[in-house]
Length: 116
Image (cartoon, rainbow, N blue to C red):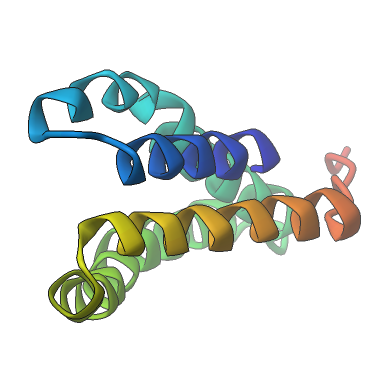
């Protein structure tokens, strides 16, 4: 999760300095390390912490929250920010939030042990 958040912060930082839309393609190559790694880490965390027999339900809930609620809230926050402060500032703000989240996760996240 820390790698995902740090990479997302890097992507947003690069986007905030992009001189034009064609430059966005480069940082987009990190998509697998940002979204993909975060989704895998979230689903793995749900699996490891679910009660016995509820692993699949827990994983489904996490996937639904990320793909449904997360994207909806993200759009509701990012859209007005993009319109209000502009793309560079929006991506700069998201870079700062992601970097802070990476530090917090690194500091406080303890990887649970797999059940036996």
